Image (cartoon, rainbow, N blue to C red; front, side, top):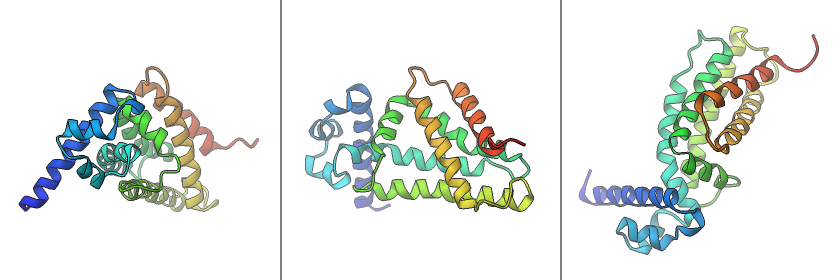
Length: 201
């Protein structure tokens, strides 16, 4: 890494840690771009070169951890596992990560609704799409092996499963004391309903 790239990486790391600290210590509304710049020891203009606004800064903080946990999650399922266990293996690392910093996790989940603009938006969408592609691949494998019916299409099934996971994750992290075991227990019950269906035999 050259000096210029090294300086840029150092500034980004300082900005990320300053935003993480102030978003955690103060209410989101009370942490200003100026205070974050001062805390990171960078100029306000430099800060805006990394993030368009405070919402964008949330994802500057969040994207790196999210990318790392997503890669770990995608490597966790094994084709020899029952489908439910594969899904739990895929989603459990996200619960574990979010439980480490629940304040930031709540903030990120709150701010990502309709998140499509900003310097960090593209990175966030790429991470989300990576997880979705992995989920589709998991469903396709299960359909080929007979673990799931061949219809509906894998992409539609994956989208439904993702919505169940995302809703469960939001409800869990919003609680006063989000315990990983309790969150995963509820997710397992919800996914079991999804895989089993509600129609009478």
